[in-house]
Amino acid sequence: MKDRKLIYILCCSIIFFLGISIYFIYNNYKNEEIRIKQQNELDELYLDLDSVSNVLNDKILTISQLGGDIDSLLILKENIELEKREFRSRAYAQINRLQGKVEGYRELLIAQDEEIEKLKKLNEQLFEENKEQKVEINNLNSTISTINRSNKKLEEQIEVAGRLELKNIQVKGIYRNGTEKLNSFKERSLSKINIEFTVLENSLSKIQVIGIYLRIIKPSGQVLYDISRGSGSFTYEKREMFYSIKDDILIDKSEMKYNLEYTKSEDLDKGTYEVFLYTNDYEIGRSEFIIK
Image 1 (cartoon, helix red, strand yellow):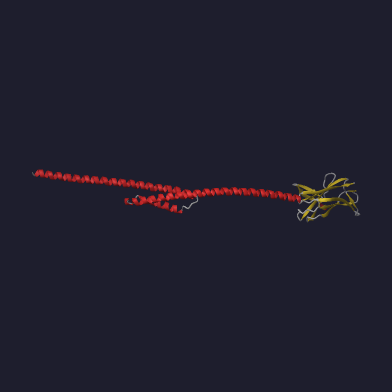
Image 2: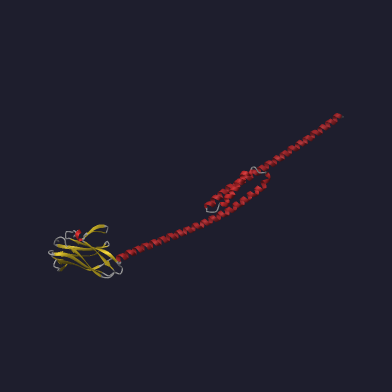
């Protein structure tokens, strides 16, 4: 009887301990299952947070390239990185709070997408406006160039129209006794050669003092030239030419008479001599005389 009672007690004890063991095993299994689930949720949440951080990087770069303000986004980026660094050390009870933050970050990213679209449209608008302005500027520059060419052409025409014109060019030989001969004279006793001319009235001429260059060409083709008598050289059509004498005269748009005198310093050969008058790089008149 005692043995049966002992066996009964022993069986009850075994069943009790077995029940307790099963309970603890089941409880540990449930706890591990909960821990794994929480760990998976944390891992997933961390990945979400990391994904948000990467997307935010792209948004910051895009907005910066479009000229938008990124200061607040940089602060947000720093906060997210801080969340990531502290993430693993936080209690599982904070999962819901972190999930709420991640959702908030995602909503902010969506808002940044809208901002990016606005910036893109603004940049496209500015690009189109710049294109239109460039076209307008090019058209304006083209118009200015055309006007400048027209003005230059007009100035050239006015300059040509304002050139001096001469009439009544006469060549006189003046002898030592004061006698004058016109156009044809003997060399003996000849003292000077006088060139008389009239400058025509021209309202387009500038009021100025200009140099008149006289070239007397011998029958041989050489220029009557004597430095002691005021001979020298000047530039005509980009080449150097010698002149017999030069004189400065005042031009005031009205008709005026002038004369130039060349004092003979050498015997003149018989033949026809050519007379040329120049000023400001153009020829204004010509004539001739004969030495008998």
